[in-house]
Image (tube, rainbow, N blue to C red; front, side, top):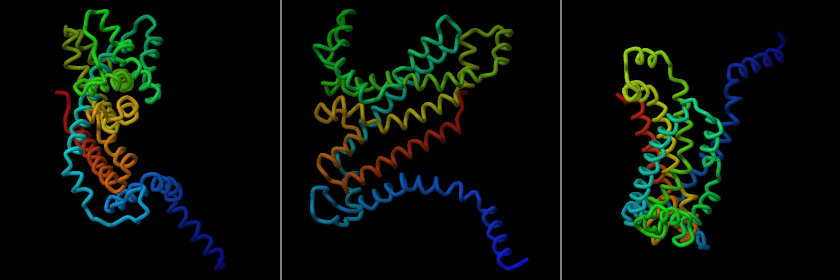
Length: 301
């Protein structure tokens, strides 16, 4: 074999041994460009003090932005509001999604049509949805207070009160997220084996007993997956909250996302906002890891 052929064969053999890198490489580079570089640049900016409207270059300050954020009362309140909002925005859609999945798992007339109508809120864009809910929340012209008057209840100020703004935002999120939870749990219900339920029926088990001892344990992994996805989505909620309240009244609905948005684009403190972004990223990652560990280490019973 001549020297050029030997080199060509060696090159082809090397390419075949490392073919997986040629297929995965472009995707890795694209992901680094979309995620890795912004993350690294955020780390760089978090270590500097820089205002976007200033002509001065960024000034290195080390961990001062992180210390400022962790010692800030406003940031601590934003974290508490975010966790409070997330807890409500996960529990309610999960419960309603489970009930809805149990209903739509049964066969009845026009089930397909009703299921299609039920999932329509999930397909709406958050901004358009928030604008419609903003009109519905109006204290005097909104349809929600009109519905309350029909059943003899007093009107509510909804998103215009510090006390009711978070529950009102959770109401919007529940309306939007419940179909998503229902679809995941419904997929789990559709994959359950029928033999245990037939054996339970033969043994005389009642419907509540079959639900408690068979349905919930078998569908529990799907519920936990839905809870994990819903928790991450609720933690980083921004668009509907900003359209409805911009963090108000006062700062009663100022979650971490709203807080860091204001720091970056209202007060132009890019370095401080970058530190808040990294702290928020750590919070979301930590919650996700805890939920994944909880899902792997627990079962319904």
